[in-house]
Amino acid sequence: MLRQLFAFALFLFSINVLSCELVVRVEDYAAQSYRDENMQWQGIDIEITKALLNQAGCTYRFIPVPWGRALKMLEMGKLDVMLSVSKTEKRTQFAHFIGPQRIEKIRIVSKANPSIILTSLSDVLNISLPLGIQEGAYYGESFTRFTQSLSTPDKYFFKVPNNDTKLSLLTKGRIFGFLEEQLNIEYEIRHQLTPKDVFIHPVIVNQAPVYFAFSKASISKEQLNSIERAFNHLTFLGVFEQILLTSQN
Image (cartoon, rainbow, N blue to C red; front, side, top):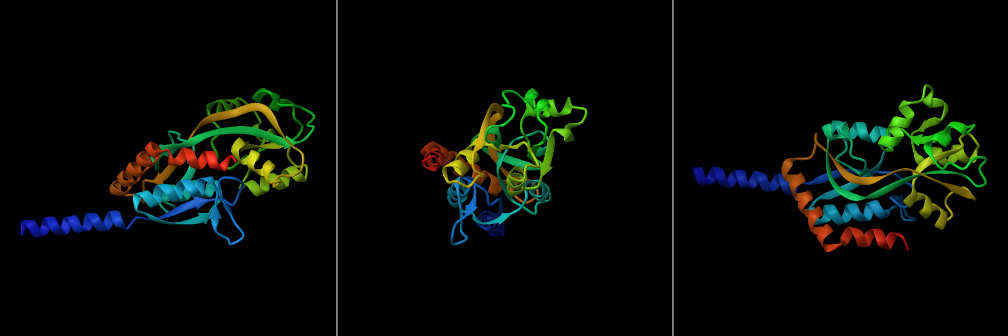
């Protein structure tokens, strides 16, 4: 009887691990994730995620969701995975972090020949239009302290739901510029996907690791352990590093 119970428990454990079917948040934008002409997801984050989850024995599907809404869905367990997420104390309450996935560098982008060249965050106080920032995004401790020091932060920063909105507002002259990861901007410039003649300002808003974030509400301990082992194995083999190097060509 004891042997039968043990065998049944082992069977349930195997089913739990093998039924690793994950919903992954993506956004159709620039280098990280985009749909090709066949409407298949491509990009750096896509390739890294496929490598990780395939190694872990998980199946997956990608769904596009705005960043701010995605964080709430991750907290509720309606999303299983988010990519390129900054690790904060608040987010660790509802997400497991595996990584780092890579190092993120946040820059300020505007139209070419700007009236002011931003070399520090304090230069933002001299611009006549606000900067577009992603709703729910984290841009580092220095940026957080700077915005908290402002009596009217909405005068200088305008929250947008997605990256397409940032580009549209810049083209229409509604914002001075926007905050974006350097990786994405350089990709868009190379592939002529940005408005013509954009300018990357010297100031680096934030440079820090970003991670895979897994929902504590939907990911089991066994699944998490399996994914962590897969991450460590692929890191040792240099798989993630090779994907990043290939993307820069």
